[in-house]
Image (cartoon, rainbow over all chains, first blue to last red; front, top):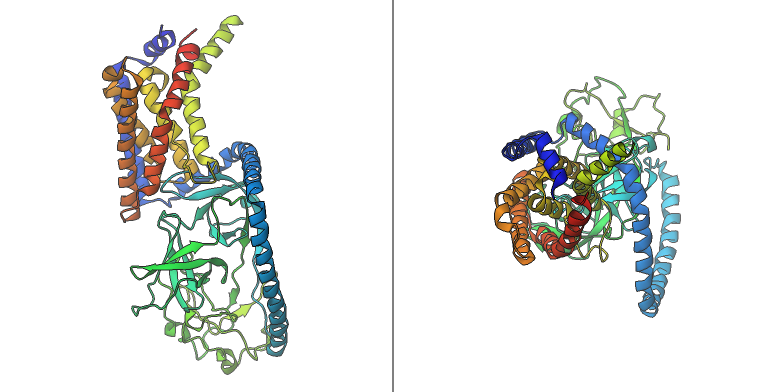
Length: 373
Length: 170
């Protein structure tokens, strides 16, 4: 008794026609797919994505609450079975961390005294925005998460997202009240990083598996890295802050370093979006004798995530000497005789490189101006 | 008034498969993390599309499937048009073999679904590999499709109950 079906068939036409509609819609999907292949970042598609995220956010918010609760409870039940072992492990870890804390406190004092000696101006720090994960793409090839803050909360495209462990990903779509994080494991994810002890820069490339790889584009020489070395964001490209912990090198494969991420995507629940303001570069004086400085600089970081054209001064606290261009002279500004109207004392200014936007007027001795924190 | 209520209930019943598909998409967009992320979330809309394409294609017109797939693309952040194409092709496969599957035992239909899921997986892998410019690893996709196929009998039992007792019964 397919009564309703009969009705609909009468209303919508015969069966043969529905097959035509099906083929037509397959064709439409194909065209859509082709057009998104060629212009994935077209503003129409982006706008549509952001609108849909916004529209779905309330439903996802409501539904993700109970899911998180159940996961919390289930996690707790599992914890009961391992309580003794975990307690033991935590005690050991605590003892180790205490040692680290003492060392860190001592180092902080030392650094403070150095900073006073050097008239050091700390680069502006990122202001974190707390967010909850309300959605996650359970898709084998696209790895992303949705969080419950958007443009209204100050989130912008390209910002870094971290959780308790380390870098989670970066923001790619921003709705009004929700935004999408592209995870580091996504095929499209490219994040500039460096390996701390090896002192080399590279690009962290997502491979859809749980472990992304650092591929090196900078040098053709064999890169010396070893398992156990830390991987941090390099800040190249000026989109992400430098020094966010990413993971640990576990192995080498085809000249690439396989990275075990600090972030555990199966447990990511609360994240922080880092509202990082890139240090502004003030044009000091146009047309001074050293106008050709920008040409000395070699664009060194290879493909960058975004904002390729943004100026990227190296940071004074860069831990790796090889990470920045060799031309960056820490004392360059003292030689230039910076104009007196500059606010920053120029005895020892942070080293600066200036990969300038091609269309910009020549700027000399771009100055790192700490912006309001 | 009762006429209107009847019309509403008809509409609700006719829309049930579409709504189920949309719920399946929502499940794919939620941080479910079954067994702490070990078990991938099954692709419920694939089951919905296959099931109703065989047992009641008029309840799940191609337009509904297109919308379901498009919503999935939007929510999971993939290239637009991929999932609509996959679901519509699965519907095409199911429709073309409908006369064969009608009245067969569930095991045979299950095999048919496994075949459709394999076709879907191949399309997904091909398109995504083409888009990323590299041959992508198939492990995750394989696991997800295995989970979906493994859960098909459970969903199909529920759906056939729903279809024969609630939707078709007036």
